Length: 612
Image (cartoon, rainbow, N blue to C red; front, side, top):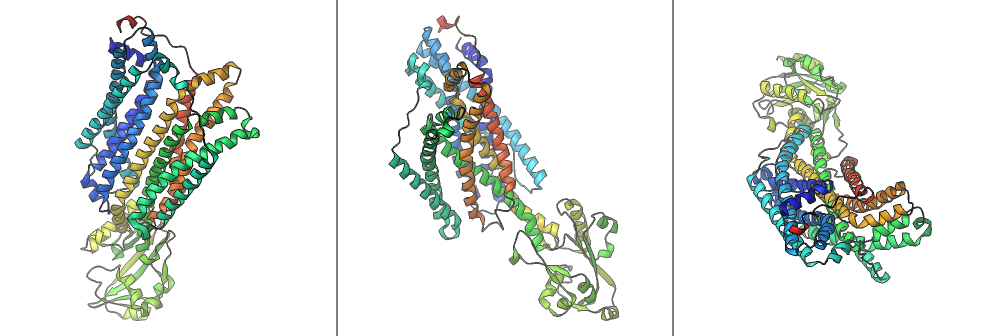
């Protein structure tokens, strides 16, 4: 009978349970995905240049476990808020506390275990799909990555089973100890906020100073090193909490005292809603802001490393393609690239010397670059024939395009007459640049590989003068960072947005009466929906803004690893804001459905009350 009653209760609130269930499924799926990577030491070691990367991911796994625990608490509070009055009704009908506790235990544990099982299966599919998507779309070179990990699956099932077992026991004990009146009125009891102005001011100053110290440590990490990271972590977390605790309260108080703002439409009601249970929201918003910074930071750094690859390849290889013995190359394939630059230099080879024509280099200068000129906007030096004829150092740029067996020979850049007098067969060196390297990558690689196979015994990874080979080498180095950045960004975004969504939805049932009262006195539905959008918008916007500020300062830590961590910053920020906005819209829809579209539900279980 308890199983039947529990299933009937779930069926009666199926829409709400679908929201809860989907959130729990995503939580377990994300946890599995992270564990599958954290437990795959072969993948981490083979796709990252950081020696401590395994430790970092183990630490990150613990952090995600803590975040998941907080998420389960919010989801659990949402479940209890939905069913609390139903349990009170059963008690009014004479149900025994022990039976009610058993029913709560069954509902909580059953929903949790089923969600974990489904989430684990989904996590395996997502891990495989994300791997395929990122590898194909980003041209990553990932090795030893396995979507299915028995160790990760076991850890996920055990971890969530323990969490839901604890939650089920806690829920059962909590409900059994409460009176009927407490169950009916608990969520309607407001929390009074009393704050001394001096203490509020002190918290504001302390919070801002803590953030300033943390930002300073991150901006000069080369000096402070690991100590700086530790200090920054503590001060930024503390500063985030104090800023939310002080600034939000002070700002809401000032806005409510401003009649021009507060008395316009339903602004006073919206501000009062935001002030409601402010201390509890302060902790949640602080956590969301930190998660936001971690998620956006991971995505930004991942995209940053992706941007590094073509820049580094372009720096070491001025030409998109060069062809030794170019007379043997297919003109048709080269012309199909629609090159923006296509230059051919004549050359002759004797036993100890390589000859070039000076006039050809004067007419079409040879491009050269060096790694000490690292910049987002790569510029090249132009070497004339006269420079190449007299400067041995400049000739090294030409030497890099020779075959391995030719590089030990002397280079002579002579005029056309002297070149014609050399008694040797003439060959050519062809230099090509295209409009879009990425778009022409496949065709360029085919030509470069064919040229390599025909003319050189060295392997592709030894040839950094050919841009596609340099690109592949850097891609192999940074692909691990890139993959992990996208992976972590998606994982943390899902967790933070879900935590925020369930925290807001868990208080929706207590807001029903307030919105019902406003509707009864004639408030238009349009104004009520506008108030909801503003209220939830503030709860999403404030931690998002502070999280972005954290990221902007945090990127200073990567200036030693990246050419410009702030390059094309709009792209990761735009992607992240778009995904974050989706959660905002979904939360508005769910919250509005709860507080404004309430319908009388059929009272179930009346015939079963005597059996309890």
